[in-house]
Length: 257
Figure (tube, rainbow, N blue to C red):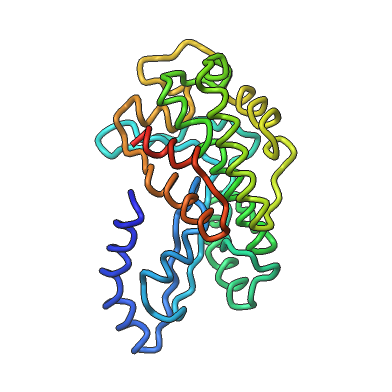
């Protein structure tokens, strides 16, 4: 739920992983990183094992939502695809042969269960997809909570929300481009992004559980965990690494938290 908790989990795993390494068994860490960006370096640092453990990420197009009492339901996806993505985020233009072997093994596990897997060609491409998934979650969806407007079109009608939307999208796209990532045409500017989100989530009457709304608003409405620290603090830290100022993002995080 937070970078601090992720660090604690890594510290707790340290003795087990050290024992594995001492017995010449090299395990693999797999991070479920849907909607989160570039967590592998943080996990690697927290493990304190000098890069001896390979770290792989998976992401998902599936619309999986908590429906109470730690139960989850797979809703029909509003996107065109329902895929699992397997890879590692980074700025490299090539995977190592060892990483390719691991990615293929992990992909085989999903494909054996008849789940379609998309293996991206490079760490930089995987990072670009992570940003694509995270961009609406970081910029528009938190404002839906602040202004209590679940749908993008309704949010744009809020006078106070307009400059915040513009500022947030500009900041995050600046970080994305500074890292050398590329975005799809429907995600690479404010107008296209809002048009795409309005297509995915048009205004409709909400049911009792607000399942028609984007996932972050749904989780807020149903008092589920929001993972705001992973979602919003991590991009702020990444922006700091690349000397990109993010005053709107920092305000966004403080307002939602």
